[in-house]
Image (tube, one colour):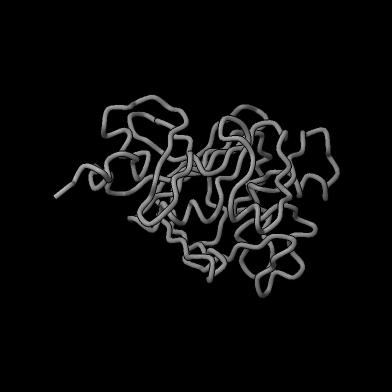
Length: 227
């Protein structure tokens, strides 16, 4: 009848928040059937989000291997990618929202939120998105299966992608211009191919936002279930 043992390490940032820890920072979590690992819990207007990606200054190389995209790289208090396997272990517990925060070089802040589904490694972490809300036009194909690829592990149909577009990302058929794990370029690179490979968010209406910082965060739709 021991019920307390599973309370020792929380399943999610929401659990930590629901216990009264309302400070952003690094915490150990243990999603169901998973190892313990550390995440950065980011409290945004009274609600806890798990940071899964952060770019701020280009200090971390994101042109990494499949293995590193799978297990994660970088520093949780700096630039990092949490790791597909860790992200999957969190989101398979419940329904989740993905929030993308972008800041451009003119210091304008943009965000967009999606409801999403993420497949396991056998599907190459297929991502399925539906936009919910935001203040920037959507730039990622919705209601399509987007498959993760890196330069050394290319999904079917992506054979021309991640060479010219560095970094691992969820591409659909041909490579889009929206790869938040691409090469970090400061805006002095005005030539078109360079700018294209820098962090950008190109909306369907063609407007290109050149991006200085990015955050990708996840949050369960029903946070009450994580007590």
